[in-house]
Length: 186
View (cartoon, rainbow, N blue to C red):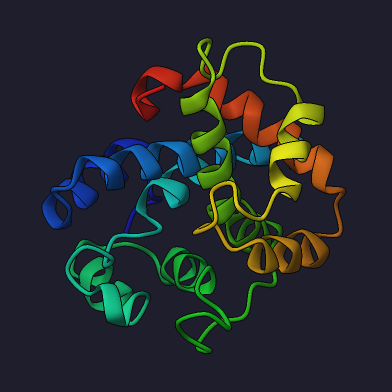
C-alpha cells in the first residue's frame, strides 16, 4: 500500500460517484482540509486527498454512509489509517465505528458540514468566494434558516472537539476554498 495522494483520491472517487454536486462537495472539503493541514504544519496533499474521498460511499449507499468505506477503499489499496480517518467523519451521525482523535480526523468532522454553508453563501454573492469575510459568514451561520440542511450542531461539536475557534476554522476553510474555487464550481 502506498500513501494516499490527491491524484489517487480523484481516480477512486470517480469510480464510485457520478453526481456533479458530490464532486463539488469533495473539492470543497478537500480544499478546506488542505488549509487545515497547513494550519497544523501537516501534509497538505494527504489531508486534501482524505477530504476528496470522505464521501466515497455516499452516492451508492446514502442510507448506510460510512458503512461501506472500508470495502471500497481496501480494494484500492488505501491504508487502514486513512480508511479509519474517513470513517471517523460519520461518528455519532451515521456510525459509531471510529471516533475522531487525530487532528486530521477532528478537522474532517468539523469542516464537512461547514463547507456546505460556505458554498451556499458563495452562491448568493455576486463575487462568489472572492473577498468573503469571516464576519459576514458568521452572520449567515447564525441564521438557522440559511443553508438549513447544514447541521450546525454537528459543526459546533466538531469545532469544540477540534479545540479551535469557529472563526479561525472558517478563515482556514475560506482560504482553502478560495484557492480552489473553480474546481468547487464557485
